[in-house]
Length: 254
Length: 254
Image (cartoon, rainbow over all chains, first blue to last red; front, side):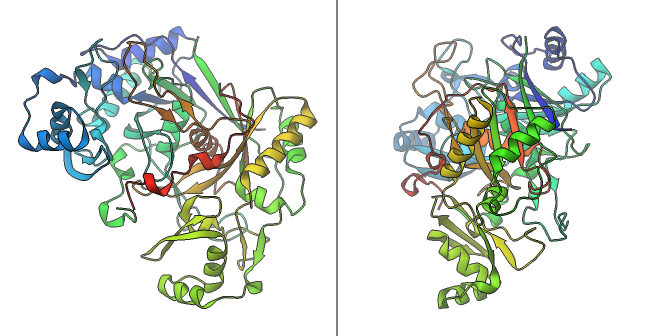
C-alpha cells in the first residue's frame, strides 16, 4: 500500500580521529544498533567526520598569512589565518559582502568560507576542519569498503550544511557521492495525463542529504551518519556530486 | 538505539477536483493504506492538489493580456496569457533573463513563473494551476480538519518544487505550514565541546519538504501526500512559511 522510506540515524558513532576507518565504524554501529546494512541502502555521512578521518584538521597557529588574507580579514572581521585557509581552499572569490566571504571551492561548490568549520574540533577553538580534498573519492572509498565488509550494494553520499541565496536557514546538501545518480530525470517525459512535465530534473542527492539531516542534530556530530532504506534510485558507478554545481554561465543571480 | 523517521507516501489519493475536502481524503487514504494518523505526524501536501481543491485553475482562453504581458511574452518566448497570470500573481518582477521570468510572488516567494504549473490539469494543455492564495491558511485549515477528524495533533506543510540559484536540479520547499516551527534554532548554543556552533539555524520545514518529495514521483501528482512520523519538532501555532523567505536586504546574490 503506502510507499515507505525509513531514515535511521546512528547514535553510537564515536568521536572520529585522523586515520579512523569510517566504513568499518559505520558497519559496526549499524549492526550494533539493530539497523544493519541492506542492499539498496544509501549511507549518508556528514563531511566533518570524513574530513577528520582524513586528517583535514589545521591548527590556525600553523597558518602563514599573505597580504590579501590580512586585507580580507580586516574587511570582514574574520581571523586572517582563517581567511588564508579559505583562499587556499578556493578556486575563485565569488563575493565579499557584509562580513561574508563567498567562494567557489576547488570542488566547484559556491559557499561561505569554503565550507571550513571552526566548531567542535579536538577541544580547541583555534583548530579548524577543511572539507575533504575529493569528496566523491571519499564516498567511493567508503562505499567500496562497506560493500566489501557486508556483501551488500549500497550508495554513499557525503553532506555538508549550507546557507542558500534566497531562503532563510541552512540545509544539508550533497558534496560527494558514489553509486547513485544525483538526479531523478523527467526531461522530455510526459506525465500521466500526457502533458510535458514542468518539473524536469529533481536534485535527488540534495533531497537525500536534507532528509538525512532530519535525524542529525547540532551540526551533525552527535549523529553524523544516516542510513536511508526503501528509496528507489538509479545506481551509477561514475556519477559525481559536481554535477549538482551550476556553472557560472547559467547563474541568474550573481 | 538508532534514531528512526519514517516517510510514507499515500498512493491512493484520487484526482482532486475543486471543492474536494483534502483533510477527509488524506485521513481516509492514510487509514485505508494502513498508515493512519498519529500524534506528532507531519502531513506534507503538494501545493498542486491544494490549488485544485481551492479552484485555483485558470483556462488561458479567459485571460485578457495587457501590453506589458505581450512585451514580456515576446522577450521570453512565453504565452502572453501565461505571462499575464505570472504578473497578476506577483508583487515584483525580480529578473527577466534568457527566457526565465523570476518574480517575488504575493506570498514573498522568489521563483520562476510565480509557481504557475501548466502540466496535468483537467486533461487540457491550455489550463494552468496557480499557487494557493494563502498557503499558510490552507495548511491551517487542513490541519484543523485532520485534528478534528482524528483527535491527533499533527502539523501540516504545503510544498512546491523549485529551482535554486546556484545548484542544478529542483527540490521541494515549504510554501505554507501550520503547527510547526519552520526552523531548528541553534543560535547562541554551544556544541558538546563547548564551542559556538557554525550551524545556526536549520530550515527544518524545507528539509521536511525535500524528504517528502523522496516518496513522490513525476511532479507529485502520483503521490501528492506524504506523512512523516517520528520526527521531533517544535509545535508552533503562529509560525508561517513566510519566515523562510529571505528579505531582499539580506540577499548576497541579486
